[in-house]
Amino acid sequence: MAEAHGGSEEPGKAHLLDILGGGLLAISWLLYLAGTKRIPATFQQKWLFHGASLAAILIILASLHGWMDRSAAWHMAEHMWLMTLIVPLYLLSRPLPQWLAVSGRVGRKLFKSLFYLTRNPIQAAFIHAIAIWLWHMPGFYNSALIHPGWHFTGHACLVLSASIFWWSVLSHRNSAAFLALLLTMMHTGMLGALLTFSHTLLYLDAHDLQDQQLAGLIMWVPGGLPYLVAGVWFSMNWLKRNASG
Picture 1 (cartoon, rainbow, N blue to C red):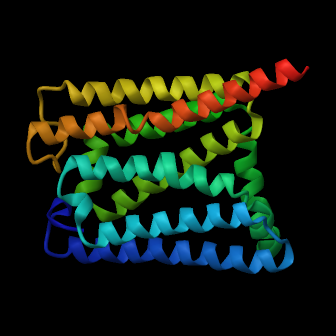
Picture 2 (tube, rainbow, N blue to C red; picture 1 turned 60 degrees about the horizontal axis):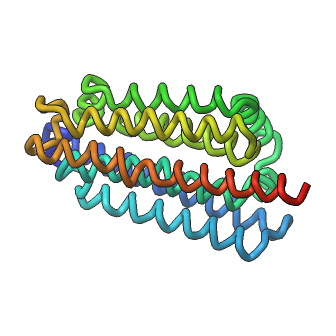
């Protein structure tokens, strides 16, 4: 990536990691397409999956062009785009049967381990919270800006924990899932508010205090909307079930 990653060799390494991310995306996409030949997906599921993949491509292209390194606000937008848009879209597309159809035992072992972590929405929310707060602490965040490999690891942790969280919430859709959404919206809003009202420059990619405050506002307001929308959706479904019962 660009200057924020520091050093003359760092941008090249960062681009290689972006290409690696693109390669992983391409593999998952090809596996899904192959899987649909064995286990057909609905029209809606296909469009959700392809939409999520296209959104992921936009992130990779933006990263290759250095957009995310121009400011902390752009970088935060990337994080929220990954955690609250791309991951939920993938999970709503329900690609697991297609992936398992072509990945065999390796895929089953991998997803079985992840499934264990999704059994309790509150536990999943706690795992996601640790990842979010850890990788937005100045020490970890700034280290990721300097070292592309660390940056890739941070994004992997955020995406993996978001996958566990949304998988658990969307699978259960009960009071525990609603509480998990509420808690996540509250603590991400708190972190966003701390950045918004901070008078100290914490992040190396923030070109001024206003940029960092905008990053906090992005996490706080638009970043919290998906949790709010999901919570309202759950509530409406719960009311409908009670009314019909």
